[in-house]
Image (cartoon, rainbow over all chains, first blue to last red; front, side, top):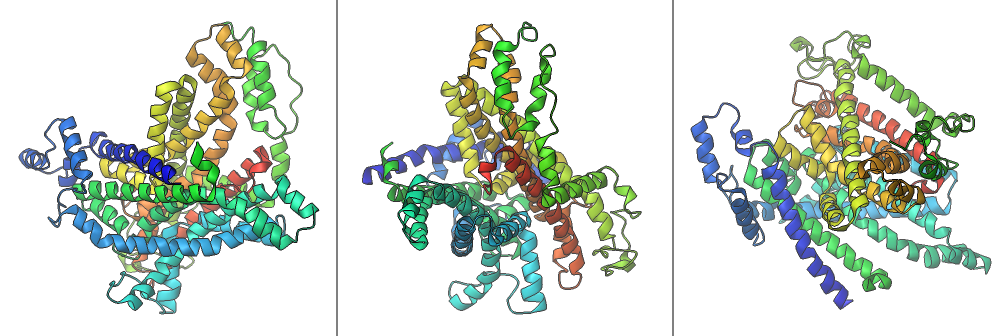
Amino acid sequence: MFRYAVRKLLLAIPTILGILTLVFILLRVVPGDPVRLMMGDVAMPADVAALRHQFGLDRPLWVQYVDYLTHAVRGDFGLALKSGLPVIGEILRVFPHTVLLAVVGLLITVALGLPVGVLSAVRAGSFWDYGSMAVSLLGLSLPTFWLAILMILLFSVKLSWLPITGAGNFSQPGDLLVRLILPALTLGISTAAFAARMTRSCMLEVLAQDYVRTARAKGVPQRSVIYRHALKNAAIPIVTTMGILLSRLLGGAVVIEMVFSRPGIGQLIVSGILARDYPLVQGTVSFFAFTLIAVNLGVDLVYGYLDPTIRFD
Amino acid sequence: MGISTRPSGSTEPARAQTHGPAQPQAQPRVQAQAPVRRPRWKPPRTLRALLRNPGALLALLVMVFLAFVLVSPGSLTSFDPTLMSLPEKYAPPSRIHIFGADQLGRDVFARVVYGTRISLGIGFGSTILSLIAGSFIGIVAGYYGGWFDKTLMTLMDMLMAFPSILLALVMVASLGTGAINTIIALAVAMTPNFARQARASVLSVREKQYIQAAHSVGLASWYIMLRHILPNILAPLLITASLSIGVAILSEASLSYLGLGVPPPAPSWGTIVNEGKNAIGLAPWVATAGGGAVTVAVLAVNLLGDFLRDAYDPRLRGLR
């Protein structure tokens, strides 16, 4: 297990470098002039040149690349344009809110998606199965932002139970949690639809295996077949898809944060793009990628723990 | 040149492959060899299955209707989607304004109807673009293999590590907003998925006898890839594409909602929701109409995609 963990950690290093390179390519090499976008079409050529010089964008591309890479790996993403503060500081200020939203969203997803998926697979073809799969298809087809607005309309506007916007403060946990309910619920519901379908198909596959049939044939009670034989083996592919799930959750958080005006990584990226705060966008996206790699590394480790055979390939 | 006159070595196994019990939509492949008379075309299984599936049938009707709206929005409403009429600001739904009016007094129904063209156009456009780009990358990588394959696939894996909405946002940040840029941004975000799948299929097809036969008669690589590999891996790719359209429509809506899609005053469904959001208590019909349109379209596309996938391979039921 230790060797497996070390190998996975070492493998993450080229991935991080690759993703940083990718962010660099997407934002700098792709046609489209960030400085032009930032200043608009009416800017004077001299101003454009000055700003370009200020960001070091007039240097050769490879110099910019090395400079960006050496700073980024140390967590230095330069200064944000609007606030003039270090980008990393801005990120760390809002990051806990995104983590909180994603973690609670994940809990809701698992609590909602897994049981529904398992039950659908066990009673495949039943009324429950068709009903829950129809509902989950609807869940997959609802735009997250629209679901969020409908929740606001119901719980905040009509019923006035919950506050609409903001994330509160970590010094007031009660307020923080109350403001978390709607965003986390929205995020959880939309991802749970996906999780339920995923769980169902993993479970169906396992239930068709020989050892499940054998267990049934020798008279093992249904409960035991499902919990001891099927679910344990279905856990492996389900955990594998957790990476996709978390990626969806973090992607969903980007939109949710904007709807609920919550501070967070997604809100930072979108407002950065809208304000054409280019260093902020680049830094935040890189940081987001770091987070995703770390999360996937964690999933890999859990996976290695659950399925010992995976450690030896 | 010799391929159309001596097709038996390369195309017979191909037919056996594409002619499996549940894949009737792979038929066009066979048209290339006119001399070989194949058995009479049976009534397509997919069509019969469709008639037995009320959900998919309804979805198809919705899609046909949306296609009609897309082609001729003017026949459904006489209002101009961008015409402002401030006295009618936030007018509630009535006989004249079926879905009410928005903050500038524009007819919401007209905006939803005209928004079909933008939302579905971008959704379908970006899916088709990513299908083409992804298949190309996947086929070339799988066919040549080696370091070329490794490099391309590592790149695709890295792109896949990002949530697609984030990747689209990054692309919009560097390209700017607008319809074409949105299509490109979404296509980039969706391409890795197609590339991965295409490559995996190529690997399973590459060692088949008909490909070796094509090699042995000295066909050019591009010809083998285009005429022998592509037709044999196309069906599952098209299934994936049909399931991706919903995701693309949702992503476009998200981008427009965030104000990073097609710029106003053009009506996109996501933009309509965004404009209605601030008045959700005062005029809930604006946001409801926009979001409802997205949901109906995506639900129809997903139902049809699910149906096609089940018809193609029942084992994949419920998989997403």
